[in-house]
Length: 141
Image 1: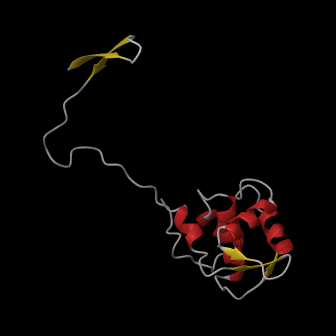
Image 2: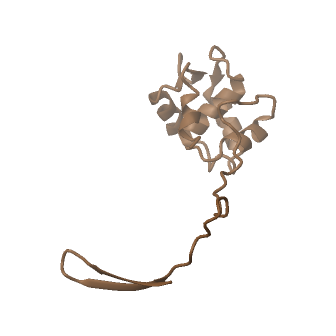
Image 3: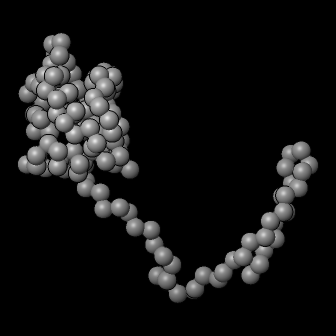
């Protein structure tokens, strides 16, 4: 079926276009369905992998502060009491720049702290906050 559409904008200008439409089958299940990508569930993490494999698996689609939180979670294995130095976080980040979308940026740690996902009890020391998993939910669309 051929369909012609004519639109008029607020200024009185007219636009015209032709579209070719095809009929959809009446049978159920004949339409193509959209498949969700097979992303791993970020809410159930497996800390048994090495840091590089862990980040490759779970960091896809996350932004800097979320990735910082995820890296801290991997290094502490989800333990909110374990402390990690900023130097160690930066070393791990920079060893896998391609997976992390570039070199380490200290703004990521500040933004993760501002979001309440991590805390810094002493200068240069980071721990996971009890709400750290919220960072992963934001990227799990």
